[in-house]
Length: 361
Image (cartoon, rainbow, N blue to C red):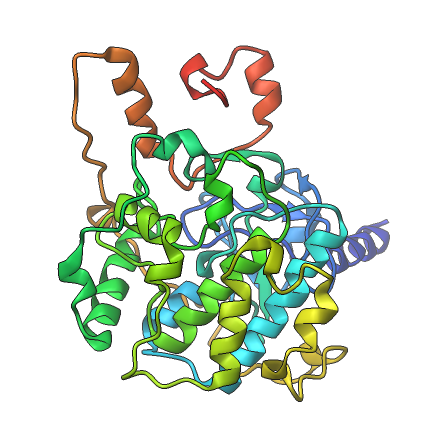
């Protein structure tokens, strides 16, 4: 009956907090829980998309969470207060832990993937890397780069205000560009020695730094220079004196952004929850309290919480050519940064993926 179908829709939506990564991307509908966790992508057209928290554009099938995303929120504000940061980081801790409890590593935690629902609470999205492959996370992508210190001293010598302004201006372009950025990727992900779920906590530490300081700690003028900063994090992870933050906040960031074997969370999420920075957080009822920053939704089709990304802003990669066609082919993989290869193994087995794009090639 019609009533039974509506009840089934409501039941499905209760299990779905996994949404698209923002305007301009196909939505991922996933089985999840109260913290925005997700396990498997669901088919397009699932009943789970019909809910008051999202708006669906019938013209292209994209779904948007009404509150926008953390990237847009950070671009609108210079910095967040420590109270606001505590709230958003705490909710993201719960979301990441939900993923880990399912046996998955997200591997792509960044502000773009922290969506905000109509009440301002965090929804974690973009689970393509849980089962797929993203070029920015493959070591051979940076194989020709050494681990020397970055050379963008012009950017380094900016004061914090100018650096934040430059970052926010470029960040708007990078969000949907073909270039991307490795700002939030843990250094061990680039190494050939392997990594584990602790790489997600490193990414959260970078986001926390950005919330409080106004820009991520390794931001540079190019992805290559950012990569060098990440790999040399012991020298490049610094705190500008002109942007004061509490010792508790600084300590937690450094506990997130350190060697993986010493990283907070290695002994379980309770280690993170008990950190002094989260003093006073009601972990059991945090999603029932008002969000740190209220979200204004004027109507069901209100998109004011999203930034606009005109095609003229999309950055094109610049790649130097050589006399080696195969090498040039690989260099063209720059255009695939921050794209997810879904069902990668199956496509590779059927020959649908070119050989130069396969892992290890």
